[in-house]
Structures are given as structure tokens and as C-alpha cells.
Image (cartoon, rainbow, N blue to C red; front, side, top):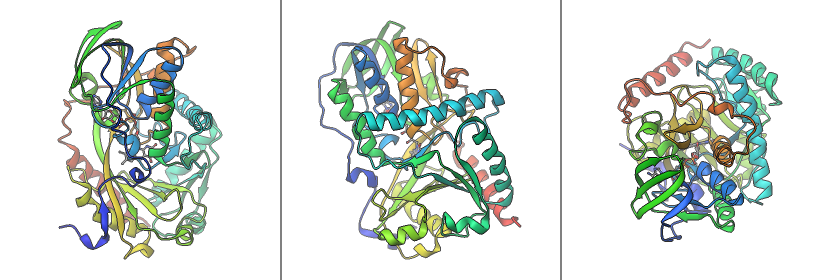
Length: 434
Ligand SMILES: Cc1cc2nc3c(=O)[nH]c(=O)nc-3n(C[C@H](O)[C@H](O)[C@H](O)COP(=O)(O)OP(=O)(O)OC[C@H]3O[C@@H](n4cnc5c(N)ncnc54)[C@H](O)[C@@H]3O)c2cc1C
């Protein structure tokens, strides 16, 4: 039973970000009969690909089953990371992971360049990030991660022992942690809106409420049936991430959609928010079922996210649980109510790294594994460069093909069990922490 006392009277299950930029339904253009490149999905990946292609003279059409930007791109936490999680538990060779960490750092620069070049007003700040260790052994692992991050790129990663933790975060919940300077935050729906405006200005054909269905043909000659008619395309880009479905079964069998949940508190005022986050960094942690949180762009609220459920549950059901999580970290927030609680899909891959590549002649960029503001923008852009033949080296994220997942056909029935196991492991870690 939900504890509804944590809700304000006007509580909404829409993302807080939509107050500033709601995904766009307006553009009801007719679907063209043909285009050079059909992009499926209008999130950061799809729009980044479309913009680069169109600016290079390619006739590109973006379709989305829902409103433009309806997916994770307008629902996420807005943490901007230069690859802090890349390669963790991937099982890939160290050389491959290092190449990915280096490219992730470049992709961070790409994001900053795009925001500046397109003049996108999205409250971007290079705030830095604090990663809290949920137990002493996790702190020791972070020490090794600091070395790895600093060895390959200028991450500015540093350990913060527990005695100094309150310099970064006003809590005793963690056992110290790591700060990473090459990290930041933005307002995700405004960043998406900025990309969309750039696509509009470039005259990309944008078709919301157009679900791609059966795809026939091969490179240079595809026919795609959509909910609004048939379209021919020389190339197809699959940019559907955590919403990948039956239209592309090969991809569907390789990404596991996992719901992530977020709440926004009522206004606390800037002074109170600064007391919680003295240096205004965004925060993640080392738990398998992690918390991620930050000040809102206007510094008046806390935006707190986590995997509040691994079963299919609504944002209304899970918001009180997230509120409890938030109060575990900040007991000072007991009694503070929440105005918004929402959910969205993250796409996990078997090797826990994002991928781009080509399969049956179709290009894909998929598998954010929870960090896609920078990475999916980057992979969309890289996919466009690949189509344009403008790359002189392959991306580190296309060196390995998107792996299949044993016994997985696209229905993640096992998530409640796996999630329960991870939660138990996290609990044991903390219970026996010394
Ligand atoms: C709650 C949450 C919090 C997150 N927090 C962070 C964070 O703080 N930092 C970070 O870096 N990342 C975060 N992420 C991940 C990040 O949001 C995603 O990686 C990123 O937005 C993915 O962008 P995308 O363009 O690949 O996919 P999406 O933005 O998900 O877009 C995919 C689109 O494809 C469309 N689609 C699917 N199937 C079809 C079809 N058949 N036909 C037409 N259209 C179709 C969908 O409608 C959807 O709009 C978070 C994700 C979630 C859900």
C-alpha cells in the first residue's frame, strides 16, 4: 500500500522535466514515401544522427512511435558522465576497455561542443560527480578505479575518505567515495528540445506517433511499414534503446529494458539544497542497485533516482519507496513531500557496454546501460559519420558486436529475481561492513 502522505496535492506521474519541455506531439507531417536514411527513435541518439546527416546533405526522416523525445531522453536524471562506469564488470580485455574510456572522454567534449554550437540553454554545468562507496570494500575498489580513470584520461578523479565526506555530501550513509571532475549535469528535456530545434532548423523530416513495424530488404533498399504508411529508405538507423521492440527482433534479443524511477521533491529552497550538496555535485553510488541524485537545475529541489522495483510497477506505486531511499541518505528530508514521480526504460547489454554497429545492413546504436546523455548522443553522431564515410577509425564501441543474451528472447521475466539477488548482496555488504 502506498504511503500517499509523501505526495503533494498536485503530485504528477509525468517527469518534472516536462514542466519546462514536454515531448512534442505537434508535428503531424505526412510520412514521405522515401528517404535516404530512416532513423527509428527520436531520443538523443536518433536526433544526433539525424542532425549530422542532414547537415551533410542527406535526406533523413526520423520516426518515433510516441511524441518526439518521449523515451528516456526526456526522463533521465540529467547526470553527464565522461565514462565513469564504462567497462565495469564487462569481461572485456583491458585494452578494449581503455579505448572505450578514452573515447568516452572525447564524447564528453563532443557534448559540450554541441551545447555551445547549437546554443542550447539546458542548465549545463560541469559540476563534478561524487560516487559514494556503500561499504568499505567498495571504497577499495573505487581506489583502483581512480587510477584507471586518471591513467587514460584527464578525469580529475580523487578519493574522498569518510572523514571528509561531508565536504561533498551532508550524510554519513556512505563509506567515503570518489569525486570525478569530468562530470556534470543538465536539464535533459531542455537539452533534447535544443537538439530538436536544431533538427527543425536543418529541416530534418520529423514524424512523431509513427511506429516502425516490419522492415524488409537490405542495404540500399529497405521498405519499412509504419503505423502511418510505408516508407522506402536506403539506410536504416535503429536508435530505440530501452524501448526496442518487435520491429527489430535481433536487437530486441540483445538489450534488456530495465525500469528506472525518479522523484522530485517539493521546493526546499537553495540554502537547504546547498546544505545537502555543499559543492553541488551530482551523486551516484557503488550499490548494484544504485541511487543517483542531484540538485534540480534551479537548486531548489532534490531529484532522486533508483531502481525502486524490478517488477512492472507504476511511478505512483514506487515513489514512496524512493522517498524512503532518499531519507536513508538524507534523514533531514523526512517529512519533505514529492511533487513528481516517474519512470523510464534503461537498456542493458550482456557485456554492460554500449554498442554501435551494423546488422543485416541496418545501423544501430543501443545499450546505454544507464549512462546515455553523453554516450547515446555520441554514438548517434558516430553512426552518422560512419554512414557519411567521414571516419578514419572505427569507434571503440563498434569493435565488439552487440552480444546475444543466453536464453533471452526479449521478455525480461528474470528481472525481479536478479534484482532481488542484487538487493540482497547490497544489503549483506552493508550489514557486515566494519
Ligand atoms: C529514469 C532514467 C534515468 C536515467 N538517468 C541518466 C542519467 O542521469 N545520466 C545518463 O547519462 N543517462 C541516464 N539515463 C539513460 C539515458 O536517458 C538514455 O541512455 C538515453 O536517453 C537514451 O537515448 P536514446 O536516444 O538512445 O533512446 P530514447 O531516448 O529512449 O529514445 C528511444 C525512442 O525510440 C522510440 N521507439 C521505440 N520503438 C520504436 C518503433 N518501433 N518505431 C518508432 N519509434 C520507436 C521510443 O518511443 C523512444 O522515444 C537514464 C534513463 C532513465 C530511463
